[in-house]
Amino acid sequence: MANGFIIIFSHILPLILGFFSILLMINGIMDEQKHITALGIALFLVAAIGPFLVLPLFI
Image (cartoon, rainbow, N blue to C red; front, side, top):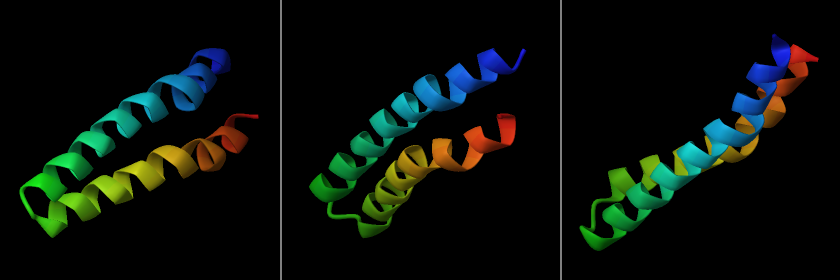
């Protein structure tokens, strides 16, 4: 049961969050909206650091 969660949190969720964060950063830079750019950067950091915080809870 935990193997499904491990795959979701280590491979699928960071990919989706990273993709949307890059879209938010591009959109924020092109429209000169700093709050959207900051949201994209924060989402990218969550996508990068999130698996290291969540996966030890499953092991």
